[in-house]
Length: 400
Ligand code: C2E
Ligand code: MG
Ligand code: MG
Image (tube, rainbow, N blue to C red; front, side):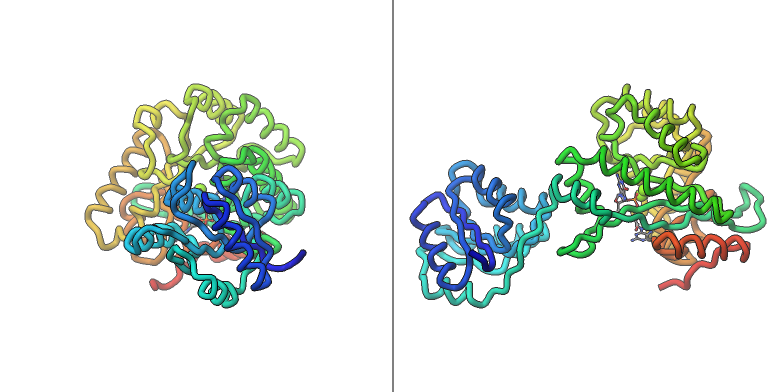
Protein backbone atom coordinates (compact mmCIF):
# COMPACT_ATOMS: atom_id res chain seq x y z
CA UNK A 1 0.00 0.00 0.00
CA UNK A 2 1.28 3.46 -0.73
CA UNK A 3 0.27 6.95 0.37
CA UNK A 4 1.24 9.40 3.06
CA UNK A 5 1.76 7.68 6.40
CA UNK A 6 0.04 8.51 9.67
CA UNK A 7 0.89 7.08 13.07
CA UNK A 8 -1.67 7.40 15.86
CA UNK A 9 -0.93 6.97 19.54
CA UNK A 10 -3.85 6.65 21.93
CA UNK A 11 -4.10 4.45 25.01
CA UNK A 12 -7.58 3.41 23.93
CA UNK A 13 -7.09 1.00 21.02
CA UNK A 14 -10.61 1.66 19.63
CA UNK A 15 -9.94 5.39 19.28
CA UNK A 16 -6.63 4.72 17.53
CA UNK A 17 -8.38 2.38 15.08
CA UNK A 18 -11.12 4.91 14.49
CA UNK A 19 -8.61 7.59 13.54
CA UNK A 20 -6.73 5.13 11.31
CA UNK A 21 -9.97 4.22 9.49
CA UNK A 22 -10.76 7.91 8.94
CA UNK A 23 -7.22 8.49 7.66
CA UNK A 24 -7.48 5.52 5.25
CA UNK A 25 -10.65 7.04 3.80
CA UNK A 26 -8.59 10.15 3.06
CA UNK A 27 -5.84 8.22 1.26
CA UNK A 28 -3.43 7.74 4.16
CA UNK A 29 -1.73 4.56 5.22
CA UNK A 30 -2.26 4.38 8.96
CA UNK A 31 -1.07 2.52 12.03
CA UNK A 32 -2.11 2.90 15.64
CA UNK A 33 -0.24 2.09 18.85
CA UNK A 34 -1.25 2.33 22.51
CA UNK A 35 2.05 2.96 24.29
CA UNK A 36 5.29 4.93 23.93
CA UNK A 37 7.53 1.92 23.41
CA UNK A 38 5.59 0.76 20.32
CA UNK A 39 5.40 4.37 19.18
CA UNK A 40 9.21 4.74 19.19
CA UNK A 41 9.63 1.47 17.28
CA UNK A 42 7.03 2.47 14.66
CA UNK A 43 8.57 5.93 14.19
CA UNK A 44 11.80 4.31 13.06
CA UNK A 45 10.28 1.56 10.81
CA UNK A 46 7.15 3.19 9.47
CA UNK A 47 8.55 6.76 9.01
CA UNK A 48 5.21 8.56 9.31
CA UNK A 49 4.91 12.11 8.03
CA UNK A 50 1.89 12.77 10.25
CA UNK A 51 1.51 11.97 13.94
CA UNK A 52 -1.75 12.04 15.85
CA UNK A 53 -0.95 12.19 19.56
CA UNK A 54 -3.15 11.71 22.56
CA UNK A 55 -1.83 13.73 25.51
CA UNK A 56 -2.71 11.14 28.14
CA UNK A 57 -0.84 7.87 27.85
CA UNK A 58 -0.04 5.03 30.23
CA UNK A 59 3.79 5.10 30.14
CA UNK A 60 4.59 8.70 29.17
CA UNK A 61 2.68 11.96 29.26
CA UNK A 62 2.07 14.01 26.14
CA UNK A 63 4.46 16.81 27.14
CA UNK A 64 7.31 14.33 27.57
CA UNK A 65 6.45 12.73 24.26
CA UNK A 66 6.58 16.13 22.53
CA UNK A 67 9.97 16.81 24.15
CA UNK A 68 11.26 13.44 22.96
CA UNK A 69 10.10 14.15 19.40
CA UNK A 70 11.83 17.54 19.49
CA UNK A 71 15.07 15.97 20.75
CA UNK A 72 15.13 13.50 17.87
CA UNK A 73 14.58 16.38 15.43
CA UNK A 74 11.14 15.23 14.25
CA UNK A 75 9.86 17.13 11.22
CA UNK A 76 6.53 15.27 11.07
CA UNK A 77 3.30 17.21 11.15
CA UNK A 78 1.58 16.72 14.47
CA UNK A 79 -2.09 16.73 15.44
CA UNK A 80 -2.69 16.85 19.19
CA UNK A 81 -5.78 15.01 20.31
CA UNK A 82 -7.07 15.31 23.83
CA UNK A 83 -9.98 15.12 26.20
CA UNK A 84 -8.41 17.77 28.47
CA UNK A 85 -9.83 21.27 28.45
CA UNK A 86 -8.63 23.55 25.72
CA UNK A 87 -6.21 25.47 28.04
CA UNK A 88 -4.14 22.34 28.71
CA UNK A 89 -4.13 21.41 25.04
CA UNK A 90 -3.13 24.97 24.09
CA UNK A 91 -0.17 25.02 26.51
CA UNK A 92 1.00 21.63 25.16
CA UNK A 93 0.77 23.12 21.66
CA UNK A 94 2.80 26.18 22.68
CA UNK A 95 5.43 23.96 24.30
CA UNK A 96 5.70 21.85 21.15
CA UNK A 97 5.97 24.88 18.87
CA UNK A 98 8.57 26.41 21.21
CA UNK A 99 10.67 23.28 20.73
CA UNK A 100 10.48 23.54 16.95
CA UNK A 101 7.79 20.92 16.30
CA UNK A 102 5.32 21.32 13.43
CA UNK A 103 2.02 21.22 15.31
CA UNK A 104 -0.64 21.70 12.68
CA UNK A 105 -3.92 21.14 14.53
CA UNK A 106 -5.67 20.22 17.73
CA UNK A 107 -8.60 17.88 17.94
CA UNK A 108 -10.88 17.84 20.94
CA UNK A 109 -12.27 14.51 22.11
CA UNK A 110 -14.82 13.08 21.54
CA UNK A 111 -13.71 12.97 17.94
CA UNK A 112 -16.08 14.01 15.17
CA UNK A 113 -15.16 11.87 12.16
CA UNK A 114 -16.38 14.38 9.58
CA UNK A 115 -14.20 17.16 11.04
CA UNK A 116 -11.21 14.84 11.30
CA UNK A 117 -11.60 13.74 7.67
CA UNK A 118 -11.71 17.35 6.48
CA UNK A 119 -8.59 18.14 8.45
CA UNK A 120 -6.72 15.12 7.07
CA UNK A 121 -7.77 15.85 3.49
CA UNK A 122 -6.35 19.38 3.79
CA UNK A 123 -2.91 18.05 4.60
CA UNK A 124 -0.02 17.43 2.26
CA UNK A 125 2.33 15.18 4.11
CA UNK A 126 5.79 13.98 3.22
CA UNK A 127 7.61 10.99 4.56
CA UNK A 128 9.22 11.74 7.91
CA UNK A 129 13.01 11.71 7.83
CA UNK A 130 14.45 10.41 11.05
CA UNK A 131 17.81 11.77 12.10
CA UNK A 132 19.20 8.77 13.92
CA UNK A 133 22.35 6.67 14.05
CA UNK A 134 21.37 4.64 10.97
CA UNK A 135 20.70 7.79 8.91
CA UNK A 136 24.08 9.25 9.98
CA UNK A 137 25.86 5.99 9.04
CA UNK A 138 24.17 6.09 5.62
CA UNK A 139 25.17 9.75 5.26
CA UNK A 140 28.80 8.84 5.89
CA UNK A 141 28.84 5.91 3.48
CA UNK A 142 27.12 7.91 0.71
CA UNK A 143 29.42 10.92 1.15
CA UNK A 144 26.55 13.23 2.05
CA UNK A 145 28.68 15.03 4.65
CA UNK A 146 31.12 17.73 3.61
CA UNK A 147 33.22 20.36 5.31
CA UNK A 148 32.76 24.11 5.07
CA UNK A 149 35.80 26.22 6.00
CA UNK A 150 35.58 29.49 7.92
CA UNK A 151 38.69 31.71 8.04
CA UNK A 152 40.55 32.54 11.23
CA UNK A 153 42.53 35.76 10.99
CA UNK A 154 45.53 36.84 13.10
CA UNK A 155 45.28 40.43 14.30
CA UNK A 156 47.91 43.08 14.48
CA UNK A 157 47.46 45.00 17.72
CA UNK A 158 49.27 47.14 20.28
CA UNK A 159 50.17 44.07 22.33
CA UNK A 160 51.89 42.07 19.59
CA UNK A 161 53.14 45.12 17.72
CA UNK A 162 52.23 43.47 14.40
CA UNK A 163 51.90 45.57 11.28
CA UNK A 164 49.10 43.85 9.43
CA UNK A 165 46.33 41.31 9.91
CA UNK A 166 47.05 37.94 8.31
CA UNK A 167 45.03 34.83 7.46
CA UNK A 168 46.12 31.91 9.63
CA UNK A 169 43.74 29.11 8.80
CA UNK A 170 40.22 27.76 8.89
CA UNK A 171 37.75 26.09 11.18
CA UNK A 172 36.25 23.03 9.45
CA UNK A 173 32.48 22.94 10.04
CA UNK A 174 30.53 19.83 9.14
CA UNK A 175 27.58 20.01 6.73
CA UNK A 176 25.01 17.35 5.85
CA UNK A 177 23.24 17.46 2.50
CA UNK A 178 20.42 14.99 3.10
CA UNK A 179 18.83 13.49 -0.05
CA UNK A 180 15.25 14.26 1.04
CA UNK A 181 15.51 16.81 3.86
CA UNK A 182 18.15 18.97 2.19
CA UNK A 183 20.60 20.86 4.40
CA UNK A 184 20.65 19.70 8.02
CA UNK A 185 22.65 21.91 10.42
CA UNK A 186 25.25 20.41 12.79
CA UNK A 187 23.28 21.69 15.79
CA UNK A 188 20.66 19.11 14.77
CA UNK A 189 22.75 16.08 13.84
CA UNK A 190 25.66 16.33 16.33
CA UNK A 191 23.37 15.67 19.33
CA UNK A 192 21.80 12.75 17.38
CA UNK A 193 25.29 11.37 16.66
CA UNK A 194 26.14 11.63 20.37
CA UNK A 195 23.02 9.84 21.59
CA UNK A 196 23.12 7.13 18.91
CA UNK A 197 26.77 6.21 19.47
CA UNK A 198 27.83 7.42 15.99
CA UNK A 199 30.01 10.32 17.19
CA UNK A 200 33.32 8.47 16.99
CA UNK A 201 32.60 7.40 13.41
CA UNK A 202 31.52 10.87 12.42
CA UNK A 203 34.65 12.43 13.96
CA UNK A 204 36.83 9.92 12.09
CA UNK A 205 35.08 10.94 8.89
CA UNK A 206 35.69 14.65 9.66
CA UNK A 207 39.37 13.91 10.32
CA UNK A 208 39.67 12.08 6.98
CA UNK A 209 37.93 14.91 5.09
CA UNK A 210 40.03 17.60 6.83
CA UNK A 211 43.35 15.81 6.28
CA UNK A 212 42.50 15.17 2.62
CA UNK A 213 41.86 18.90 2.21
CA UNK A 214 45.00 19.99 4.08
CA UNK A 215 47.04 17.70 1.82
CA UNK A 216 45.32 19.05 -1.31
CA UNK A 217 46.03 22.64 -0.25
CA UNK A 218 49.67 21.80 0.52
CA UNK A 219 50.00 20.52 -3.03
CA UNK A 220 48.76 23.95 -4.20
CA UNK A 221 51.32 25.64 -1.92
CA UNK A 222 48.73 26.80 0.58
CA UNK A 223 49.39 26.19 4.26
CA UNK A 224 46.40 27.17 6.40
CA UNK A 225 46.06 25.59 9.85
CA UNK A 226 42.80 23.65 9.96
CA UNK A 227 40.74 23.34 13.15
CA UNK A 228 38.36 20.44 13.61
CA UNK A 229 35.67 20.17 16.27
CA UNK A 230 35.92 17.20 18.57
CA UNK A 231 33.26 16.08 20.98
CA UNK A 232 34.05 15.18 24.59
CA UNK A 233 32.67 11.72 23.82
CA UNK A 234 35.62 11.22 21.43
CA UNK A 235 37.91 11.53 24.41
CA UNK A 236 36.79 8.20 25.85
CA UNK A 237 38.92 6.10 23.52
CA UNK A 238 42.48 5.73 24.85
CA UNK A 239 43.78 5.26 21.30
CA UNK A 240 42.29 8.52 19.95
CA UNK A 241 45.68 10.28 19.80
CA UNK A 242 47.42 7.29 18.16
CA UNK A 243 44.62 6.96 15.59
CA UNK A 244 44.94 10.64 14.71
CA UNK A 245 48.71 10.46 14.31
CA UNK A 246 48.38 7.36 12.11
CA UNK A 247 45.88 9.17 9.89
CA UNK A 248 48.15 12.22 9.65
CA UNK A 249 50.98 9.94 8.55
CA UNK A 250 48.70 8.33 5.96
CA UNK A 251 47.94 11.77 4.47
CA UNK A 252 51.56 13.00 4.92
CA UNK A 253 50.28 15.91 7.03
CA UNK A 254 52.21 17.17 10.07
CA UNK A 255 50.21 17.29 13.34
CA UNK A 256 51.13 20.99 13.68
CA UNK A 257 48.77 21.70 10.79
CA UNK A 258 45.74 20.61 12.82
CA UNK A 259 44.03 22.34 15.72
CA UNK A 260 41.50 20.44 17.80
CA UNK A 261 38.58 22.44 19.17
CA UNK A 262 36.91 20.99 22.20
CA UNK A 263 33.72 22.63 23.28
CA UNK A 264 33.55 23.74 26.86
CA UNK A 265 29.93 22.64 27.24
CA UNK A 266 30.72 19.05 26.38
CA UNK A 267 30.61 17.03 29.56
CA UNK A 268 33.64 14.99 30.44
CA UNK A 269 32.53 11.84 32.19
CA UNK A 270 36.16 10.86 32.79
CA UNK A 271 38.29 14.04 33.08
CA UNK A 272 41.43 12.06 33.96
CA UNK A 273 41.23 10.02 30.75
CA UNK A 274 40.36 13.18 28.76
CA UNK A 275 43.44 14.90 30.19
CA UNK A 276 45.58 11.86 29.31
CA UNK A 277 44.37 12.02 25.69
CA UNK A 278 44.68 15.82 25.41
CA UNK A 279 48.19 15.82 26.87
CA UNK A 280 49.30 13.12 24.43
CA UNK A 281 47.78 15.08 21.55
CA UNK A 282 49.83 18.13 22.59
CA UNK A 283 53.01 16.07 22.93
CA UNK A 284 52.42 14.71 19.43
CA UNK A 285 52.26 18.28 18.09
CA UNK A 286 48.52 18.99 17.67
CA UNK A 287 47.21 22.29 18.94
CA UNK A 288 44.19 22.40 21.25
CA UNK A 289 41.50 25.02 21.55
CA UNK A 290 38.81 25.37 24.19
CA UNK A 291 35.72 26.36 22.19
CA UNK A 292 32.72 28.51 23.23
CA UNK A 293 34.60 29.60 26.35
CA UNK A 294 32.38 31.20 28.98
CA UNK A 295 29.21 29.25 28.25
CA UNK A 296 30.14 25.91 29.74
CA UNK A 297 31.04 24.71 33.14
CA UNK A 298 34.71 23.85 32.91
CA UNK A 299 36.32 25.10 36.07
CA UNK A 300 39.37 27.31 36.09
CA UNK A 301 41.23 24.40 37.68
CA UNK A 302 40.50 22.29 34.60
CA UNK A 303 41.58 25.12 32.32
CA UNK A 304 44.86 25.42 34.18
CA UNK A 305 45.50 21.66 34.07
CA UNK A 306 44.44 20.90 30.52
CA UNK A 307 47.13 21.62 27.94
CA UNK A 308 45.15 24.04 25.73
CA UNK A 309 46.93 26.35 23.29
CA UNK A 310 43.97 28.60 22.44
CA UNK A 311 40.93 30.00 24.23
CA UNK A 312 37.98 30.75 21.99
CA UNK A 313 35.68 33.41 23.44
CA UNK A 314 32.05 32.49 22.81
CA UNK A 315 30.17 34.71 20.41
CA UNK A 316 27.56 35.46 23.09
CA UNK A 317 30.11 37.91 24.59
CA UNK A 318 31.45 39.11 21.27
CA UNK A 319 28.12 39.89 19.57
CA UNK A 320 27.44 43.20 21.31
CA UNK A 321 30.85 44.07 22.75
CA UNK A 322 30.99 47.32 20.77
CA UNK A 323 27.85 48.45 22.63
CA UNK A 324 28.22 46.81 26.02
CA UNK A 325 30.88 47.85 28.58
CA UNK A 326 30.09 44.65 30.53
CA UNK A 327 30.78 42.47 27.49
CA UNK A 328 34.08 44.33 26.97
CA UNK A 329 35.04 43.78 30.59
CA UNK A 330 34.33 40.04 30.30
CA UNK A 331 36.31 39.75 27.06
CA UNK A 332 39.25 41.66 28.55
CA UNK A 333 39.22 39.33 31.57
CA UNK A 334 39.17 36.27 29.30
CA UNK A 335 41.99 37.63 27.13
CA UNK A 336 44.12 38.32 30.23
CA UNK A 337 43.29 34.89 31.62
CA UNK A 338 44.33 33.26 28.33
CA UNK A 339 47.56 35.25 28.10
CA UNK A 340 48.47 34.66 31.75
CA UNK A 341 48.10 30.91 31.15
CA UNK A 342 50.17 31.08 27.97
CA UNK A 343 47.20 30.61 25.58
CA UNK A 344 46.24 32.75 22.62
CA UNK A 345 42.76 34.32 22.61
CA UNK A 346 40.40 34.22 19.64
CA UNK A 347 37.03 35.97 19.37
CA UNK A 348 34.31 34.10 17.43
CA UNK A 349 31.20 35.75 15.99
CA UNK A 350 32.92 38.92 14.71
CA UNK A 351 30.14 40.24 12.52
CA UNK A 352 31.25 43.78 11.69
CA UNK A 353 34.06 46.30 11.74
CA UNK A 354 33.13 47.85 15.08
CA UNK A 355 33.32 44.46 16.78
CA UNK A 356 36.62 43.75 15.03
CA UNK A 357 38.22 46.97 16.27
CA UNK A 358 36.79 46.47 19.76
CA UNK A 359 38.25 42.98 20.18
CA UNK A 360 41.53 44.13 18.62
CA UNK A 361 41.80 46.87 21.28
CA UNK A 362 40.99 44.35 23.98
CA UNK A 363 44.06 42.33 22.94
CA UNK A 364 42.51 39.37 21.07
CA UNK A 365 45.11 37.57 18.98
CA UNK A 366 42.75 36.21 16.35
CA UNK A 367 39.19 36.64 15.04
CA UNK A 368 36.62 34.58 13.21
CA UNK A 369 33.13 35.57 12.10
CA UNK A 370 30.69 36.39 9.33
CA UNK A 371 32.20 39.91 9.15
CA UNK A 372 35.47 38.38 7.94
CA UNK A 373 33.98 35.53 5.93
CA UNK A 374 31.23 32.94 6.21
CA UNK A 375 32.04 29.22 6.15
CA UNK A 376 32.60 28.22 2.50
CA UNK A 377 33.28 25.14 0.38
CA UNK A 378 36.93 24.11 0.10
CA UNK A 379 37.63 25.53 -3.38
CA UNK A 380 36.26 28.96 -2.44
CA UNK A 381 38.14 28.86 0.85
CA UNK A 382 41.41 28.13 -0.98
CA UNK A 383 40.86 31.14 -3.25
CA UNK A 384 39.98 33.33 -0.24
CA UNK A 385 43.17 32.30 1.55
CA UNK A 386 45.39 33.00 -1.45
CA UNK A 387 43.78 36.40 -2.04
CA UNK A 388 44.00 37.33 1.65
CA UNK A 389 47.71 36.43 1.69
CA UNK A 390 48.35 38.55 -1.39
CA UNK A 391 46.29 41.51 -0.11
CA UNK A 392 48.18 41.36 3.20
CA UNK A 393 45.09 42.36 5.13
CA UNK A 394 41.78 40.49 5.08
CA UNK A 395 38.96 42.90 4.42
CA UNK A 396 36.09 43.03 6.87
CA UNK A 397 32.62 43.42 5.43
CA UNK A 398 30.75 46.64 6.19
CA UNK A 399 28.67 46.59 9.36
CA UNK A 400 25.12 45.34 8.81
P1 C2E B 1 31.36 26.14 16.84
O1 C2E B 1 32.47 25.15 16.82
O2 C2E B 1 31.36 27.17 17.92
O3 C2E B 1 31.36 26.81 15.40
C1 C2E B 1 31.03 28.11 15.14
C2 C2E B 1 29.61 28.26 14.68
O4 C2E B 1 29.29 29.65 14.64
C3 C2E B 1 29.38 27.73 13.27
O5 C2E B 1 28.02 27.28 13.20
C4 C2E B 1 29.54 29.00 12.44
O6 C2E B 1 28.89 28.95 11.18
C5 C2E B 1 28.89 30.02 13.34
N1 C2E B 1 29.40 31.38 13.11
C6 C2E B 1 30.63 31.73 12.68
N2 C2E B 1 30.76 33.08 12.60
C7 C2E B 1 29.59 33.60 13.02
C8 C2E B 1 29.09 34.95 13.16
O7 C2E B 1 29.77 35.93 12.89
N3 C2E B 1 27.82 35.08 13.61
C9 C2E B 1 27.03 34.01 13.91
N4 C2E B 1 25.79 34.24 14.32
N5 C2E B 1 27.46 32.72 13.78
C10 C2E B 1 28.73 32.52 13.35
P2 C2E B 1 27.68 25.83 12.62
O8 C2E B 1 28.54 25.53 11.44
O9 C2E B 1 26.21 25.79 12.49
O10 C2E B 1 28.16 24.87 13.77
C11 C2E B 1 27.52 24.85 15.01
C12 C2E B 1 28.26 23.97 15.98
O11 C2E B 1 28.20 22.59 15.58
C13 C2E B 1 29.75 24.27 16.07
O12 C2E B 1 29.94 25.39 16.90
C14 C2E B 1 30.28 22.98 16.67
O13 C2E B 1 30.09 22.95 18.07
C15 C2E B 1 29.36 21.95 16.04
N6 C2E B 1 30.07 21.32 14.91
C16 C2E B 1 30.22 21.73 13.63
N7 C2E B 1 30.97 20.86 12.92
C17 C2E B 1 31.32 19.87 13.78
C18 C2E B 1 32.10 18.67 13.68
O14 C2E B 1 32.69 18.34 12.63
N8 C2E B 1 32.22 17.89 14.80
C19 C2E B 1 31.64 18.24 16.00
N9 C2E B 1 31.81 17.43 17.07
N10 C2E B 1 30.90 19.36 16.14
C20 C2E B 1 30.75 20.16 15.05
MG1 MG C 1 34.40 25.24 16.98
MG1 MG D 1 32.50 28.13 19.02
